[in-house]
Every structure is written in C-alpha cells, then in structure tokens.
Amino acid sequence: MISVKNLSKSYDRISYAVDDISFNVNPGEILILAGESGCGKTTTLKMINRLIEPSSGEIIVNDVNILDLNPVELRRRIGYVFQEIGLFPHMTISENVGIVPKLLGWSRANIKARVDELMELTGLDPDKYAQKMPSELSGGQKQRVGVARALAARPDVMLMDEPFGALDPITRSGIQDEFKNLQTELKLTVIMVTHDMMEALILADHVAIMQEGKIVVMGTPGELMSKAGDAYAERLLHAPRQQSEKLAEILKRGDKK
Image (cartoon, rainbow, N blue to C red; front, side, top):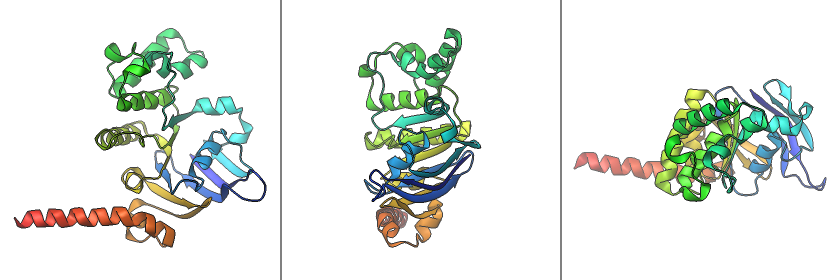
C-alpha cells in the first residue's frame, strides 16, 4: 500500500531533517513513527502527501509515485488528521466533515448521506451535532470530527500527526480504542506520528523509532518490548516496560489478598 525508499529531506543541503529512510506499510496496517521532538517523524509524514517536498527518494502509494500526481489531487486521496484538528471555525460540523466531498463535486444528497454516516460512525449523533459550530464541542468531540472529515472521501490511506496528544487521559484512551476498532473495520492503512511510546505500542502493527532523521529500529510492539536492539530505542521503551512491570506486580499482590 505504501512504500518509502531512500527518502531524505534537507533544507540547506548540509544537514538532514530526514536521512535516507525506507519502510513499507501493508494494506490495513498501522505504522507508527515514534521518537523525540525533532527526530524527523512529522517531516516524514508531511512528505507522504507533499505538504513538504522530498529532497530525494521515492514514495509509492497504491502503486503510484506521489510525484506523478498533482499535490492537491494527492491530498484529496489521503486522509489527514492533525493534533490541532484544524476545523474551520466559521463552518458547522456538517460543513466541516463534508468539505472534501464538496470540493470533489459530490451532490448535496450524497454529501449529506456521507456526513450522517461518518458522524454516526464516530459517535456523534448528526441530529444533535450536525449544525453545531466547532466552538460548541469538547476536545474529544472535535477530534472525532477531525477523524470523520479525514474519512469523508473514502480514502484507503490515513496520515495522523499526534492526533490524540491534546486530550485528557480518559478521553484519549477511549478515542484510541474507538479509532482502532474503526481502522480495523474499514481496513484503513495508517501512518501515525506520536512521541508517546505507550500509545505506539498499543495501537501499532509496526513501530519505527526515529532519531536524528534516521529510523534506528523498526518492529512489532512485541519484538520491540522483547528486545529493541538499539540503545536509544531501549531508553524510549524503558518507561512502558517499567509501567508494565509495576502493573503486573500490583495485580500479583492483589491476587494474594
């Protein structure tokens, strides 16, 4: 579904924000790019839909080189969810969700049917929320609208940049579960960026850990938790391992009571 080969980005031809990375994402899988701020993960994500142009390398999506497509056409084929959500404040929720189908020339009836379908799919009653403004929604509700909008034109591929990072822990956990179920049901191919290793391990089929523009290790959550094989990756994984061990110990003590 997505093939990235020898991808690089340099702004000054001396240093590299992304340095010769390669990976594949199979249909229906979630790949998470993880690492500290400035490691190149968001730059990588933005190159996949040409918000940033690559300096070199190749990105193939659905057997098509993205450089062969008009950037606007490419972005309409790929869903994109931002941490900041980016809802248009002067538009209703219905108008926000239906903006891409409208740009694609869908009929009013088809747009309304798709908007209602997606709002129900993401847990927002269209009768209650369709005519509300973004300012009237909670953070979790806005995030659901952002996901619905990204799905509106029925993309096979979704890019997500820290999509749940601004939410409180309870809301975040619930939306993570809902999104994982939705992704599985719709067989979406997803690349997500996060600095939260626990989120990466819970949601991903594969995790690519980046440092200074390079992928230092990539594997399944189980493989990485077992042995990452890289000193930097091991440091990132220390906290979730420690948390898992503490929870296991708490449960063990509870069994003895």
